[in-house]
Image (cartoon, rainbow, N blue to C red; front, side):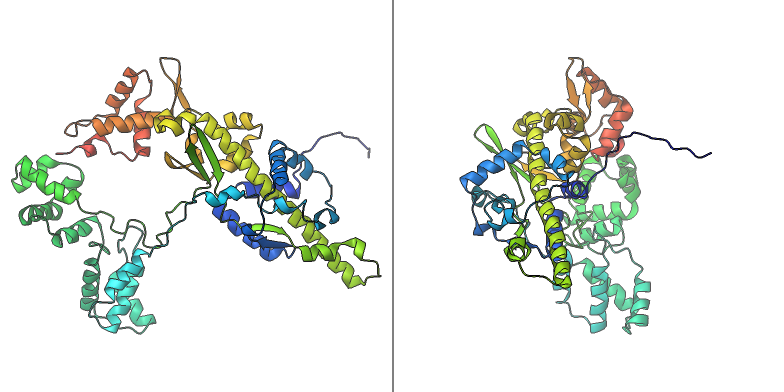
Length: 488
C-alpha cells in the first residue's frame, strides 16, 4: 500500500567557494604559487599585477584591518547566493586591495631565498670529463654517475649495465674497462662516491687518505677483517684479533670516524630537494615578536579591467547576437570564479596569520628560551583561541614551516601531548626528548645508560615514564641502544 510521509531534517553542505577556500588553506607557499599560476592560465578574467604598481592607502589599510576582525564572515557569505555587481569593480578603488595585500613595509624586509647550487652529479661529471678515457667509457661513466642513489652509492649490476649499453645503445665496453671506469669515479671528489656498500666506501676513503700511514693501515685491517665487530662495537674482539692495545685501537677507530659514510649526502638528484622555504617569518623587535607571511614570491592577481568593461551591461544597449550572449555568459562565469578565487586567497592569508599569532602567544617561552620551554599544546587549544574548527587548524599546520630565532620548524612541531610531573605541572613530550638527548650526550661513553636507567633518572626528576616510552623517544631521536653508543 502506497503512502506519503513528511520528514524534517537538517543537512550541512559545503558550497564550491568553501571547498575552494579549504583547498587553498592547506597549500604551502610554493604550492600556492603554482596554484595561482595555473588559475591565471585557466581564467582569462584574472591577470597578474606587479606589486610596485600600487600602494596601500591609509583607507585601504583600515579596511584590511576591519577584514581581519570579520574573517569568520567568509564562510557564511560563501554559502549564500549573493552576487558581486560588475559595476562595483569598475572604479578599481573598491577592488584595489583585493589584489594581494602586501604592505609597503614589506620592501624593507629580508626574505629567505633558496640559493642556486649545482647538483653533485654536475660536479662529478665536470671532474669525470677531465679523465683520459675513450668515448665508450665516457658514455658508461655518465650512466654510472646518473645511477647513484641519494647517499652516493652505486647499487646497480655493472655487468648488466654493460650488456644494456651494447644491446640498446650499440656501445661496447669490456668488463675490464668498465671496472676501471667505476674505480676512477670512486676516486673523484668526494672520495668514496659510487661504492657498492658501506665497507667498500670507507675502504676507498682510507686508501686515498693522507692520515698517519700506520694507523691508516690498522683502520684498513679493521674494515677488511673485523667490520662486523666494528659495527657492533665489539672492541675487545678487535683487540684480540689484531693484537692491539686499547690506545692504539682508539687511534685507528678515530680515523674511521673521520670518514664520510654517505658521500652523496642525499643530494645526487638535486641540491634543492632538501631545502625548505618557510611560510612564516617570526622576528623579535625589542620585546615583541613580529610575524610575517612569507608570500612575497606569490603572484599578485586582480580582475582584468578590459574584461570588466566587456561585461558592463549598462553599455550594452544594442541587440546582441546569440554568440555574444554565450560569450557574455562565459565571461560572467569566469568573473564569478575569479571573484571567489581572490577572496579565498585573501581569507587564507588572514586565517594563517591569525593561527600563527595564536601559536606564538601560546609558545612564547619557546621563542624566548628554546625547545626545553615548549608547552604541551593540541589543535583544540588553538581552535578555541581563534574560534575555528579543529579541521581548519589541521589544514593550516600541515606541511607549513616557520623561521624564527630558534631555527626553522614545522608548525606541527609546536603541538605535542604532555605528561604530569610530581610538581603538578605538565611537561611536553618534546621537552622529555630533549632531556633524554641531554642524558645520552653527557653519559660515560665507556658505559652508556640503558633505557631502564634513563627512565629511572627521569623519575628522580618527577617525570614518570615507562622504559618502552624511553625506547620510543630514543629511536625518534635516532639514538642507538646503549651497546652501540659505547666508545673506546
